[in-house]
Image (cartoon, rainbow, N blue to C red; front, side):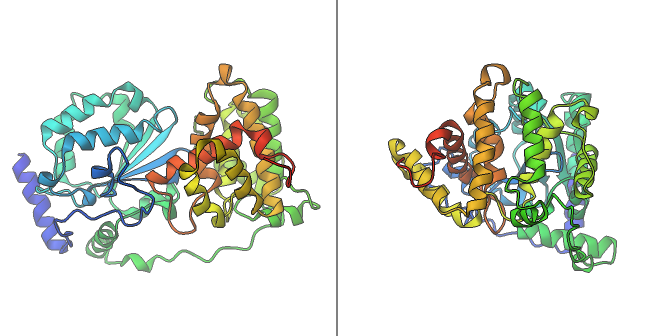
Length: 414
């Protein structure tokens, strides 16, 4: 049965003329921060896993690309399992989403069924609990056969988290498609699928030009725009209102900023704000809603709060001697525009306050940094690589932990 289904997949690939990559493990050339000192450098260098921003519910997105898997004789699959756990350990305390690109899995690079079974058992409840969605892109008959094999092991609850997408375009409803790091091979395969089954090339669906923002727009516009539309007020209304609400009612909420919220609720609140209408968070009965709105606001700024220019400087924080890192943070922040600096200081002051209640909310400066790092800074092109998370999160942690020292008056000694 399995052989017959695999043969059918093979025939479909032949019809599509799918371009298989050479059986040489590609280096993750886009990841310039990856060093040989990485504990799983031998696996991580292939770029199999990538972090890709957040989905529409504020959950971190991690992608797994099968076409990046080298031939089995070139990869220790136990090391791969270790790398998977090492990566997910950074996220399992928060809600997260996985996008699995199935294209590129072949007889040459496919792990054994025994390995898959042991891997599923290795990922215990700690990993499965906060995985809120698993999107399988370009599923084949092999996936369906595999599902039947593993069905006795997979709980009904976990099974409901799995969604199959035949085309990349179906992801747009659930996450920020532009932030995904999609291998070129997967893009080409998707275009071939669309041509074959729909007769429409991928390029035929153009994104409409963006509309000019409303005068009351709050999301997706620059800090300068918000300042001009709000009588010169430096702190954007959404940020001030959500921070004030969370200060009053959420400081001792366990897991604050870790949980996600309904996509429909987030969209409805964004619409209210953008239309200049009042938002009553009490009516939603969920303290995590304003927390997600705050993160969404930061994530949708046209330029990150810490600016594109500061990205490379921030990546270098790990090479600075520990005793000099706070001073280095101050130096980097000196180059921020005054407006960005004021907003960042306001936000970090609040997060410092949250961290001081960590005995109740379990959100110390390190935990908050893991949540906020990628909402404060990202590169001008693509998304941050997994190896960039360490310096980005460390920098954010320093801003929160040493708030008074980092944000003492500009020009004062560090």
